[in-house]
Image (spheres, rainbow, N blue to C red):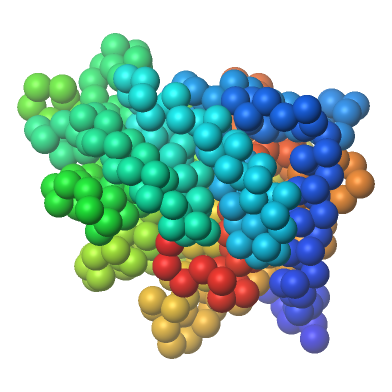
Length: 393
Ligand code: GLY
């Protein structure tokens, strides 16, 4: 069937989830082969467009390396999808490779990305009580960055001076998932209060009139007053950095899952509606430019497949919460994103990642048009969600 949308004709093809999951499994096996002999402390991070090798570039797991938890998470998801014992063994090893992070003093807000995306998936797969203990301990640690005067978790202690205050980045919303999960699984009950306060404060200050978001919100350290919204990884303070917006969509959808607070559901939709509108105006498919305001447009600006993965994943869940015609339109959008990613962005024989064409930190000229581990993580999570294998994290 041909339908007219996104300002062009789009082939609305069925997405074969099982075929794409099988592809992901093959890439996981190839990646594991390339990573031999395993050093479980070295976690896959990226494969650059300029790299001539097919395997992952790895980095030492630490609190400073925010992507350390995605590879163990991918392995756990792949294990849950396939039951492959070799993958399970690797998942256990790479998860163990993160244990130091929980014991070390916390350096910034990324604890949820690091521990919930890894140990959390491991717990989902095995119900290993030591994984739950690790998540509760990491949550204790993350909670120490909460500033009650501001009402949010401090993202980057090391950048307080640079930003002129308490800084909170939109990405931080994802870390709340761990706090909420912990409060529901024997952790401190006030983890939930912290998460709700953080989301409510973010909702008040982090968005512009049209529902697009700042990357960084800066607050007065003493009074907690909102001072300004600026960017770190986007094109400009007022531009829409695609992945930042994707964190907002995912983050408020997740908040609604845990709280059933209608205000969070509404915020998730506001963030989605402007994202889809701008995507339609600026992209030639369902994968956004790295920043929606890059004047080069899709013929010159790099894309960010990772943002599309995060949004598709979130919209599959949000569509169920919203229901009706609007919910159905979100689901259709998610399917088109996954379909474009699967048809035109897969790495296949080029390298062992699932996907190409993500952008990490454009202003720093870092990881542009690359395979990046978090794109693969959210792509796989979205496929599993579509298959019905994930109903609740
Ligand atoms: N959390 C950092 C990023 O999205 O690049």
